Amino acid sequence: MPSKGERTQQRIILAALELFSERGFIATSVRDIAARAEMTHAGLLHHFDSKDDLLVRILAFREDQDVINARRFSDYGIDRLFAWIIDVVQANEADSSRVMAFVRLSAEATDPAHPAYAYFSRRYDRILTALDVAFAARFAAVPPPHPIASRDAAIGIVALMDGLQLQWLIRPSSVDMTGMVRRHLCALGVSVPDLDDAVLHPTSSPDRRSSP
Image 1 (cartoon, rainbow, N blue to C red):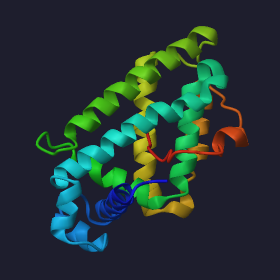
Image 2 (cartoon, rainbow, N blue to C red):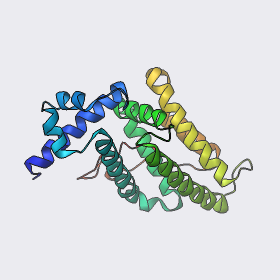
Image 3 (cartoon, rainbow, N blue to C red):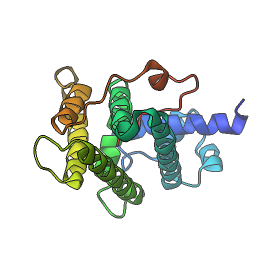
Image 4 (cartoon, rainbow, N blue to C red):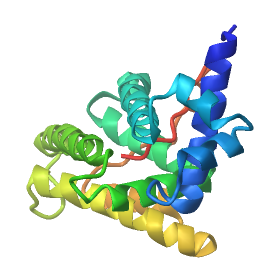
């Protein structure tokens, strides 16, 4: 069972994520987060040194969860990373607040002075490198219908997913993110089967809503 301190930190993190989703990181203050978490400003600073510290620790946790969650798809062989992508997109479609937080934070983090800049820079490097390897393995097994470099395929699928998230937030009823990603992968010669319920809903599943 989590300790009292751990439960308080979780409450602070959830409050921060809600506000980052609604307003963005820059427009949110520590006092705003404390008020949403129903605690004092001083009480919040007892658990986190600053708003920057809170954000960095949230993102570090997300980064660790990305690695852990991806391991659940080892049975999909060379397509395991693509199966994980489909899982992430399906999870994002079930929680618009997470998508909104990602879109706002990633846009703000284009500024090198932003505390999340290093995280997003590292994240894109990691994901593009992994996808480059995954596409290269797939193309070696089955050449794509049209010539394309594995690195270009990796950049394209990440750009598609990020762009779809923005369109989906604006017009959710008219954008099928999962279907679009599946069709794009299929056009590249990658056909990911429907994900097994045991993979999608493990007995003790961490939050997997961390879009690549």
